[in-house]
Figure 1 (tube, helix red, strand yellow):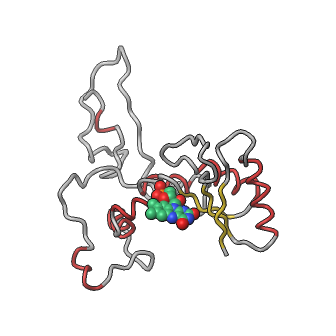
Figure 2 (cartoon, protein in one colour):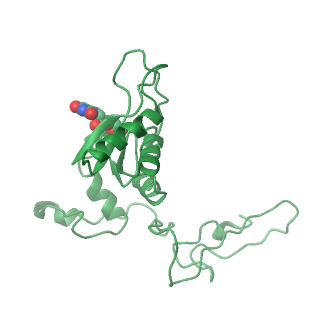
Length: 193
Ligand SMILES: Cc1cc2nc3c(=O)[nH]c(=O)nc-3n(C[C@H](O)[C@H](O)[C@H](O)COP(=O)(O)O)c2cc1C
């Protein structure tokens, strides 16, 4: 069972983040499995600190202080945002609202972009022929980092930066650095460029 709460009223004298932690503790004690953390929509006087992922700090505080799973929501705009929030331990799930209104296949497209094919993103049979993204853009960019600590496999990626006073070096071509596997060169391929 999940419960959506409004974690702050965004007005002086209203509900604040510490209150929301207490509220989440009460729901956890009553048997809730997770809290879906929204904010505001309580009074027309509210002054929300609106911005990308702007409600995530409340999901973070509840998850890490009340010890209950949270769902972050609110202008979470890309799968990079989602991966960052989940990997950083700020929430257990992310809910995507308006981005799904813009693109009802947002989740399937995010999965395809990251090379995921599995039970979490099943293409309906009539659309399956479109499950591979058209190759209209670069395909050699850095792969998404889906784990916090690299175990085994190729060595860590290398960051090499030009600094004032250093001789310019052509550096390795993108994707050919021996310290970085193809597609994971980070900035190494841009040294001196
Ligand atoms: C058309 C529409 C209807 C919504 N209805 C509700 C609602 O009934 N109850 C609710 O808690 N949130 C409602 N929301 C808010 C969403 O659940 C979500 O919190 C909000 O859109 C922020 O996430 P987003 O930036 O990913 O869209 C609605 C949002 C939209 C766009």
